[in-house]
Amino acid sequence: MLEPPPDVTDADVLEVVRHHWEPRADAVEHLAVGWGAHHWRVDMAGEPTLFATLDPDLPRHTAESLEGAYAAAAALDLDFVWPSLPAVGGSFTVPCGPRTASVTRWLEGERPAESVAELPDLLASLHAAAPPSAAPVWSTEIDPGLADHLRDLLVEDWPEPLGPAARELVVTRLAQVGGWAREHARLLALADPASYVVTHGEPHVRNQWLAHGRTFLIDWESLKLAPRERDLATLVHERRDVDHDPQMVRLFDLEWRLSEIWSFAQWLQGPHAGDADDHTALGGLTEELTRPHFGEH
Image 1 (cartoon, rainbow, N blue to C red):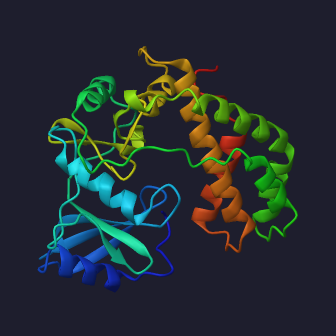
Image 2: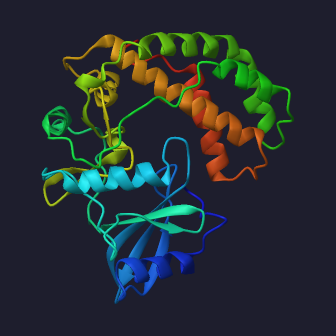
């Protein structure tokens, strides 16, 4: 997230890190990076040492699923995985106010300008890995009655500054969202749990990191056992030549866009200040309501 959280202070984060991971930590700084979670650099004697993350409690990421995902990533014997560190008590997550805290080592590097050429190979290795016992199993978060829920939301007030524009977007696309939700339900019935593999969930360029002359995949909070197309949808979106089941790619494209539409609509229907995160939410809602599907041109 771009803005610091309203319900957790830097001092709260520093206290949690000191108590559960590194008692010598002496400073934290909120970083305006990523989306969905909040992140801090953790310093020790003036040097960056750890990278702390606070994940909110969402249908997509509960405290239980986050613990399983981070523990599973740490159990993978893959050199491109940048995993979370266990806390003193052995868990990979701890509560921090209303959010869930986790920590990785600081990794000096940079995000690539575009998705790396070796991404298909990295994902193939991940999908071939033995599933860790802690790995959560994917299940959809999409309600087939999503269009009806949005219709109910439309009778509520959508406050300024961005609510009216968001409401108009939803009104103009509501019938289309209903069609997507019905298609999603049909495709969901085709998913075979016997074929599930370890998936990252969001292996796009924002979760790729260049360091020490190599590529790492970071941000493993979405790790789940799922059809491999949960990751391959990213490659199809990037127009990579990769073997895939088109119906499963379509499923996960719809899974992503419908969950984003519902999340952003709820966000902008509620009270908001019009800050950078709110404008990002409006941009995300616009994108998901209007973009082509993966694989379409």
